[in-house]
Image 1 (cartoon, rainbow, N blue to C red):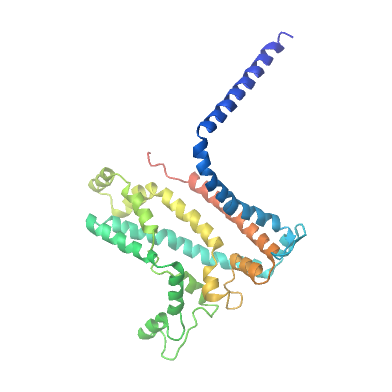
Image 2: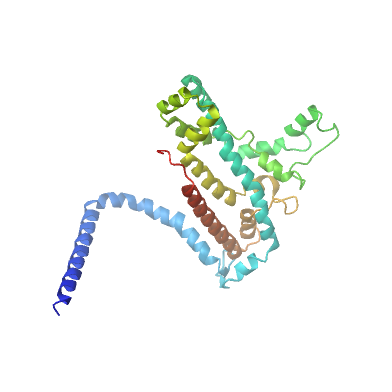
Length: 323
């Protein structure tokens, strides 16, 4: 019995500590009640518009639902049907064919441009180049997409006119850039050339400008070449920016289907179908909301897994700058 007394006393102390911590937490919340009251609409909107729809989508993926009437519970039937759907399965390789080149372009090309601007000695010209880089984002994204639609016009488009002027295409030769299986995916990847507009260059610049000038000057005095400086000084200091573009590029690539809606409508045939566009068609054209929710749930799971894997690989292989 005596041996049990210390154990009981220790449990009692733990309970008292928990009680004190709980009371302290409630007291701090009560003291900041007005701040929490002001934050309440923000959290309510976040839950209502950001968390509730995805959760509802996962729930509705187990129903045969048209978006209007009460759905009929079907269990995993939507998922079984999905993984036997040839249109969906064939859209996955198409998505990666578009996503991987655009992802590499979105990471590498702005980095090259940022390094070129960073190498300019004059602060005045650096500021001017940053402004010029930022100007294209003034125009809405849909406007840029429609401009590229005109550029790819097989009859009077700018791309066809340039190739004819250079003698690459004959005068009577017509190439349907967005209507041919051979050219449609390269054309989609080529959109946005030269791929340096927007904030990507500025985000890289912010990382490069955070590098100590003493380190850069020391590397120059040691005879370090520009390429070595980029590899051993610049890149280790902008790993965070590279991770940002990698993760958000993957998420955007898996979700994006704006080009399909505006330019191709999935044509020619099913050549430009991606899972996101197929989900859109099932939801708003075919009226299969439950099936569309299943597609969306699969996309969400894939995004979560790839993002987690990317973070793990980046953290495992990150540079130790201090060493």
